[in-house]
Image (cartoon, rainbow over all chains, first blue to last red):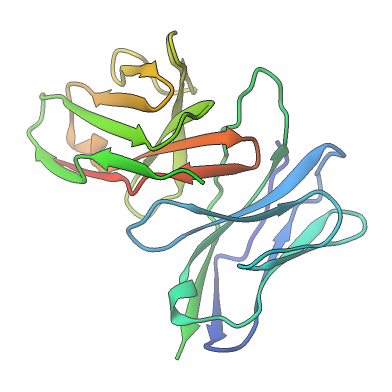
Length: 114
Length: 113
């Protein structure tokens, strides 16, 4: 799986958009970008994933650059409950042998400030 | 979606003893995994729990130390054997029926004294 690089921490004002970047310059053509987050004292939570098109769901938007070497997770209106560590993970969707394990990096600690 | 529960939620154990952690999923899932999260660190995959066969361990983790069972498609256990203070961590179970979406349990916080 491709390696990802994320800033260790970010701050965002409550109510503003939080834009979390992720670099994955060695991504392969069959690798997806996944985002998970981990709120303090909880297990990680799936947010969104994408291959090459921009994606949006009820939680967030994912913008992937045309060359797929980087992406940005956007939380449109951050709340205090969005304070968490956000993990960007790159991996194939169907790696064979039915194995779907995730490799977590250090992630970005997002602090939403009142 | 899947809801995952773990027991116990936390425990304090003495060095040299063993603890078995249970993971229950509210629906049948293809894959179940066990992760460890040491204090202030990210998650590290311990093993894939395979239904009806031996677990698949990641580098650095061995069956004698972390025996895993998965008797059916909704339940798995992880045992932390012969514990030492270095085993103090949060142990998390995850499950997924799809490649792109996994669900995690709340974790078991283990302290070894």
